[in-house]
Image (cartoon, rainbow, N blue to C red; front, side):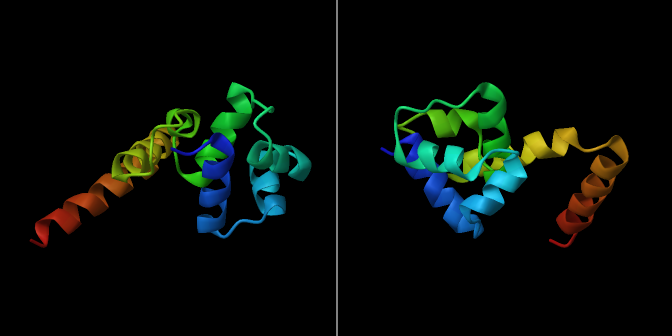
Length: 105
């Protein structure tokens, strides 16, 4: 089991982000992120949590569920959320790459 703060810190460090860098990416303040990582009293808004989850390539559900561990499904779901936000032309390019890779077998 891991708290929101523990998950934020672990994934931030895995990505090699400082608090300053994550704050810049998520349009948050460094002190706000520090409080999320170190104090259980702060609860982020849905908008802030979504930005943080996107920056860390995880889902908001994963961050909020203290019983959820990092796994392949969390990473895949985060990827597909990013994929769906791409413009259709970029989605098509990615689909074509996957098709080419699938034919190598």
